[in-house]
Image 1 (cartoon, helix red, strand yellow):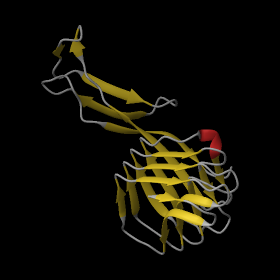
Image 2 (tube, one colour; image 1 turned 90 degrees about the vertical axis):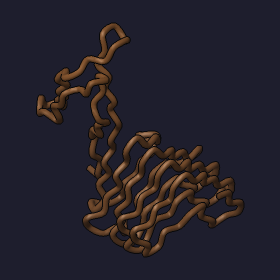
Image 3 (cartoon, helix red, strand yellow; image 1 turned 45 degrees about the vertical axis):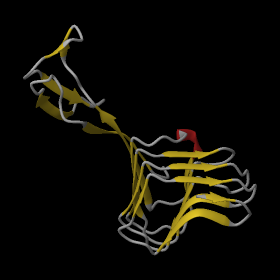
Length: 178
């Protein structure tokens, strides 16, 4: 999806629930208010997967903007890149219980603005583990345990016959207005 012109959206979900956007490229190129993805109006349980969102404008051309109502969305294996302004922007009209859940999604951490107490952002990453002898043979039944920065155990599993464990999804951080 490529947009040209001011006041345009690459994609907009308004009052939209239970949708999946998959394997999409969204690109906007105007200098003024060209949002990559605009989610608004009580849009819940939407999933954006394997999508590349790029905006090139300089004034309010956010990669992702959420506004107006309760917004719940998951982003998986996605890239959000606003070249000259915030990658992720939440207005002050989002209602309580709104969240954005990012897994293996790339954006600039310093390009995020959450303007209210009602939006929480979760940033997660994949962890794949392979236990092997000198990089050759997998080690079965190896115990792999992960703890967080407070020494709380997050998972403990045994490797399979090939030395691998099932992919884990680990929380890096939670962000809100504070």
